[in-house]
Image 1: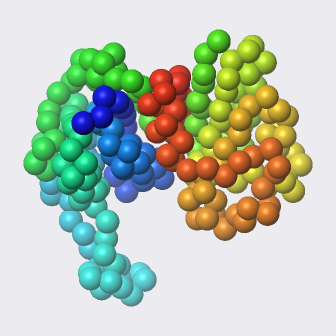
Image 2 (image 1 turned 180 degrees about the horizontal axis):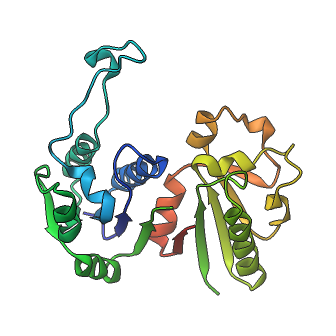
Length: 136
Length: 106
């Protein structure tokens, strides 16, 4: 297992900003290198792991449900969890509990925990580096 | 002196804040720090060498990198890019983090 641990804070909700895709690409790149990764989801970011996300067809573009192959952030998180297992590195995803309650998105996928800003602070002081990806 | 790794995801065409971010990178470098400015998403729209209005050309002391994936998404060919900018990938962001550089998403 790598001795390198990186922490990310994400704040944007799903399906809104390119930053979300970039954040997932960064996390994927870190796991590819075998680094341990912590992710603290804050504010709108807590909806990224919401288990009730549903894919849909796209009638505007004339694509069926299967053709649209709609990407869901909860599935991306699950894929990152699987990659971490394969790479034998730690991957922790914690959502801000208050932010979850505000948005009613408490039903999250398996492996994502509930916490608070204190968890992020502890990760930040224990990690090699921390990157905050804030909203604009 | 420190090592700073700054990430810019907006273009100067969408926000005046971006030019201030360029200034921050420049000032840190002039102060003696080692500074990398990584352009990603719409941040790469500033890299075309034909855009003479851009302040990127003034950042002589800053290591300028552009995300290859973002360039491809926006149809920007490597031949269009200013000579002071290197094409890179998100892997270099992760490398900088692992190295313990000071990270800031502007």
